[in-house]
Amino acid sequence: MIVRRAPLVGPVRCHRRALLVASLALVSASGATAEAQELEPRAYAANPIGVRFAALSFGYSTGDVVFEPTSPITDVSAKVYLAALGLGGTFAMFGRTASLAAIVPYGWANVAGNVFEEARSAERSGLADARLRLGVNLLGGRALTLPQFVRRAPSTVIGTSLTISMPTGQYYADKLVNVGQHRWAFKPEIGISHPTGPWTLELSLGSWFFTRNGSYYGGTTKEQRPMHSVQSHVGYTIRPRLWVAADVTYYAGGRAVIDDVPAAERQENARLGLTVSLPVRRAHSVKVAWSKGAVTRLGGNFDTWLVAWQTTMFSRASRSGATQVQKSIRVTSRN
Image 1 (cartoon, rainbow, N blue to C red):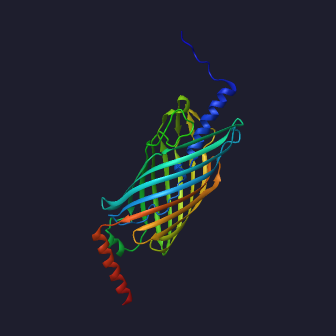
Image 2: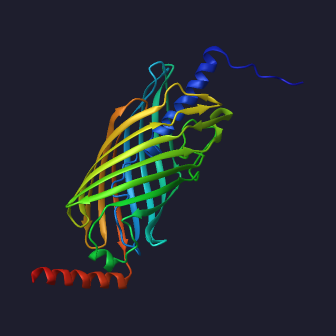
Image 3: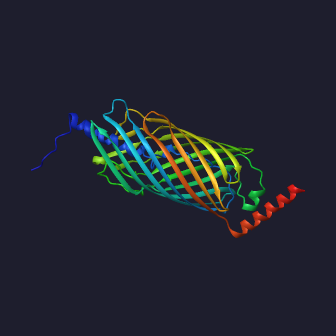
């Protein structure tokens, strides 16, 4: 005997759909996984080849999630903690400076809100989706060793990059909120960095493209349309490795589609931020960053704080050559 389940109707069906929309908004809005909310100054700044770096960062995001006015989901808030390990380096590619970096994050998230006036909350912790970024400078980014880089005159750099988000994070198909996204995402981007005296002006344009998640909550399929973003930074260098930057980003798109049913509205938000880099001895630096939502039409409206420690390594020959060049420059300037 075959027993057929009656189709969901009325309030029950609406309640299930509301839960699906809620889970999508909570996951995509969390500071650990919201790709479009990134603010990264100096992403296209000139660098010598042969540099290796390692970074350890810790971030904290807290705030609300904005839904459509007619949504039955209200008073949604989230707290997200994120620790990440990053490794990378620079090298020559077809005579240009290129860079490759990998990031492995671990996140803790707590989200709470009301669905049809019923309080709900969830906590998750685990590995988030790892990322890989390949960048190449196209103009003004000729591959230079450290001694050559020290002698160069600063110039405008135009570069391009591809960031890949891999579905390596913790994911449960029967959970509303997850640390991982269970899908691939790709972000091609082009950027420009223009130094003028101690100032650096930067602009970048990019778009995130997402693959389908065929194991979404409730046996459904989730898709997300492309998310387009623009970033701008104005930086001031006090001395090498000591700088400050004002940051702004605007992103739009990313409309959710669940079982071929698109959401009524797309995201269209803006964020402001401030970044400070402080040198610690010769090979280390600390970066402190803060950002907040300036305009939030739909999605996450978060305040985010980030602290990162970075160690930079050069080959012995490169360090020796750069030191000799710096001594020569100081002697020449005295004469």
